[in-house]
Amino acid sequence: MIVLLQGATDTANKIIDSANNLNQALTTAPPELHFIDLLFKGGWVMLPLAFLAFLGLVIFVERYLTIRKASKTESNLMLQIKQYIHDGRLENAITLCRNNNSPLARMLEKGLKRIGRPIKDIEAAIENNGKLEVSKLEKNIGILGIIAGIAPMLGFVGTIIGVITIFHDVSIKGAIEIGTISGGLYTKMITSATGLIIGIIAYVLYHILNMMVERIILRMETDAIEFIDLLEEPGK
Image (cartoon, rainbow, N blue to C red; front, side, top):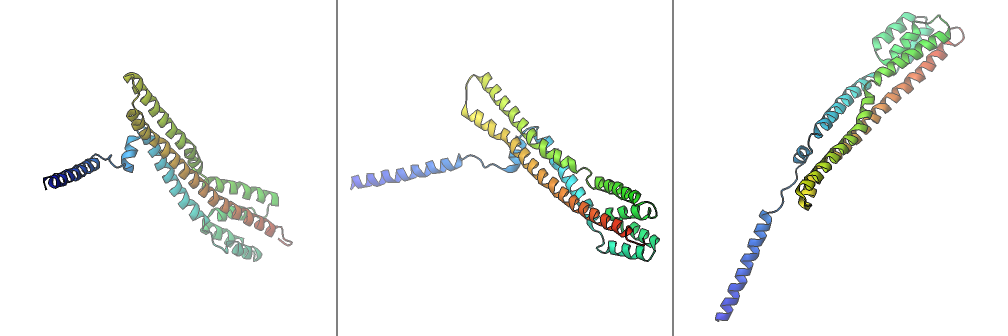
């Protein structure tokens, strides 16, 4: 009976020890990584990266709204201009373009004001005005392309600076500690990851705006050709 009691006691003690060990392991588990905490551990390089991200977002929103507004042209604008020209109501056509206030309307207005001059002069006026309108639409879009290239490189610079700092500390201590190297390296690689993310997003937004501008350019070129053909019709 005594032997059985001692065996039960030993078993109970083992269970208690296992529970204590498990509890200690849970309490000593490494803390969870939070995204915000990682960003703060990235160092001073995160500041210019944050500025680039903010600048890119502001440029995209401003250009997107501007280009979208410019693309909203009356679908029957060219038809109305044709009708006015056929009826000889040139002033009404000019007024229609002026009231429309879009890149296409401003370009056609420039051509309407030069009706009566040689066709080459009208074509040159339309082409020059079209280039001016396109340059207005493309304003600051190139900055997004610059951000897409700079952000990843700036992130790599932050990581390289962090690695240099880590090995400088190792050289001072005179001993290589895995905890020191790995603990410092993972935080410094945050700048590379952040730079790549900002660069990829900026690259995508850059091409979205370019595609929107290209659609407007295509429509302007199509309507410009149609306008010149209208003026070259017999009897015009």
